[in-house]
Structures are given as structure tokens and as C-alpha cells.
Amino acid sequence: MTGESGFTLIEVMVATFIMAILSAMGIAMLSNTLEAREEIETVVADVEELQLARAIIRQDLAQLVNRRARDPYGTRQASAFEGGLDPTGERLMSFVRTGYTLPGVAGRRSRLQHVTYFYRQGTLVRQSRAFVDAAPDPAKHSRILIDGLDSLNVSFRSGNGWSDVFEAATPTNAGPVPAPPAVRLDFSHDRFGPVECVFLTVAGP
Image (cartoon, rainbow, N blue to C red):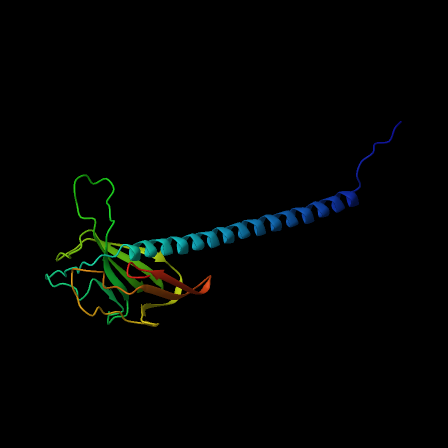
């Protein structure tokens, strides 16, 4: 008569204990991997947001035109480019640019677009309206370009230095665009810390 072979209770308990340790280690590694992946995706999204914002601002400032927009009452702006003149401190700059197209719209229409940049509650906002001159109730489109800002300051190239305000000497709708040669944005980002961006305009070198 042959005896039956098998595992003792102690062997089963040791094997179960080892499997539990390996399972816990595997779960921890998987959890860390998922967290690292989420963190990487968040960083990539923030980098893409910053790069897209820089591209939009660069394109706007490269297509400035000498066109003073009118307010809802028909009064023209003091200058085609206004920077740092808002008493509330929210508006950074306001101007008219060309090259605007509206996909899906047939027929002739103006290629000019009025654009204003604001700093509101930790965000850089680009606001535009389809028509240069404002109506009593103009339709506006606002887009957050950069989120998660602790602070933001704008300055304009003036002579050999930078100024917080830009004012055109002679407002007119003819001749070169009365704009600063360069615009600088200094901001503090939640993730990237202090960031400085300098953009040339059509009035630059």
C-alpha cells in the first residue's frame, strides 16, 4: 500500500504568505506606474498649453494693423494698440489684427479682428469679437490660454527699456502701426515657476 503525498498545513501557509507579499508588491508597482503616467500626462498637457498660448500671441502680434476700433457709442480708441491702460488692472493689451478667417462662411467679409488680452483670476484670457467696431451688445469669444498662474505682468519695449504702459504719440489710421516693437509677459506658473516670454510685433526690428 502506497502512502498519499501532499502539502502540510505549514507549507500551504508559507506559500500563501509569499503569494500575498508578491501580490501586494505588484499592486503597489502598478499603482505607482499609473500615478506616474497621470503625472506625465498632466505635465505634457501643461507644456502643450504653454506652447499653444505662445504661438497664438506671437501670431496676433505679428499681424497688427493700424486700425482704431470704435466702442459701442462710435468713439474711436485712442490708439490702434493700447497696452496697460486699464484702471481695473485686468486688461493687458488691446488691438486689431488681420488674417482672420471664419471657416465655413462663404462670401466676402473683413479679415480684421479685434483682440483683447486679460489676466483674470489666475488665467490668461484672449477675448475677440467677430467685428472690429463694437456694437451695443457685441458677441464676444473668450478663451483661456494659460491656467494656473500665480501672477502675471505685461511690459512694452520703449527706447532702451521696458514700460508698463504703451501710449501712441499720434493716433491715426494711416502709416505704420503705432505699437511697441516688443511685448514681454512675466508670469509665475504653478508647475514651471517664473517664466518670461518676449514677442516681437510688426513694429519690431
